[in-house]
Image (cartoon, rainbow, N blue to C red; front, top):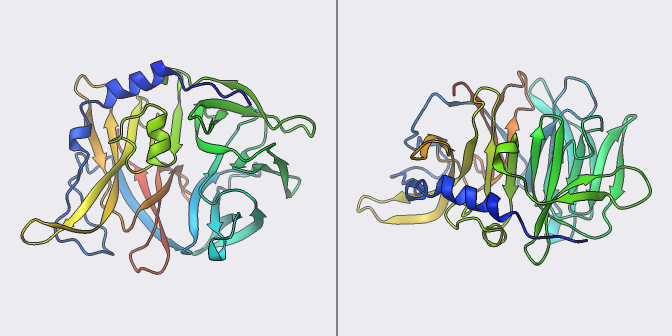
Length: 328
């Protein structure tokens, strides 16, 4: 495939937007317990509100939420790594029923357990598509259909130009990134119509997730991508563009020395302000942050921030945290 370099003007715009925010990227949390959720000094405690926390198995690595079957039900879609570091992953589709997730489908895939995106990649009138590094899958007539990629693909995110139109972001080994549509017809390649990254003004929502090295090779600043996750959102309650990324936190002893592994929060920034400023920072969450989504698989399906963490408050697995968007 011909994968040209990511739009330099897009990256340049991002650099300008966040240039004055990186100095505030380190959030220090003093004397916090490893399992607790400690408040991190949010700039606006009313923007997002923690609604629930749910425990997931320890081998869950990626999450997404989508309406797959045309009903009002939102499915939780996630990947689980295989035992013993075996290649591949399990793709699980589940829905919330009363007090627990009920599994609707489990499929073993050849793709990486860390690469998962969901969207209308084939256009507004197409099914919602689940993309993993080995191909795409979609729900049709009560079963999960598959179309494989010609080769394993390095998915680094997705962008939505509207609620009904998405593109899949794929990087090559040479760090070239293009936005692809998906073709579901049996014949031909699944990935079609590659275009460079558009200007941020035309993006409704964008999510990037990869290693910091890959994201830096796309031209993004090291501080912005240190946690491996970032994006731009136009939320339902905040029509202006919001920039989000991960910021690290360290525990400190009485002498002010840091100890233990870094812990993480999600920070939201208004990049359109004359001096870009933090709008909200989530509490420090247990473990590392593995994945994010922008809506909830539980009723009511309000807009917000869904976060998958590498551990939960009880240390029994991964954690799923939902913060409801309550104010601009």
